[in-house]
Image (cartoon, rainbow, N blue to C red; front, side, top):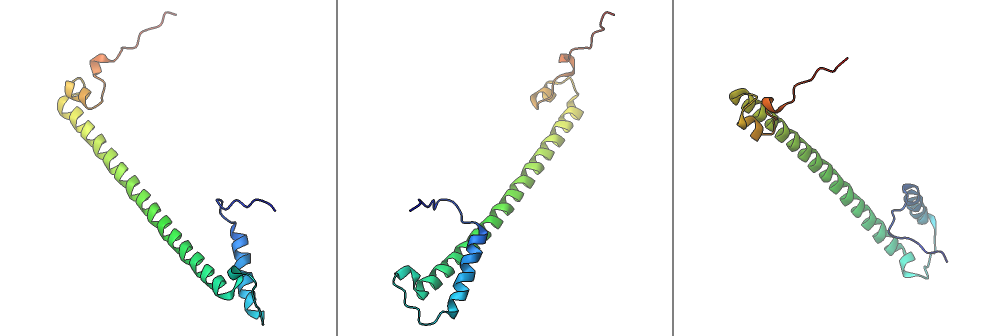
Length: 119
């Protein structure tokens, strides 16, 4: 018998086929299962559990996407406020000030002047 890897997700087509099989199972009369997991009660319980877990997963994924969107927006808000602060510091103290250097700009006097190249 082949080894079944239960750590991977089942493809949606397999799950849909299983649900169709379960729904068609209602047409079977005089069914007496030999295995407990094949009983109609266990099938119904497992279907309900699967649907509940899938719904919970969907809700958590939606919450995770919403949290990621909120974090992204907060990052942009912070970035834009830092840019505004840096521009304000450069405007107040000048491009060659120690304050401008403290917030991350390079002093204007520290920049190398372009040199002419010999032809």
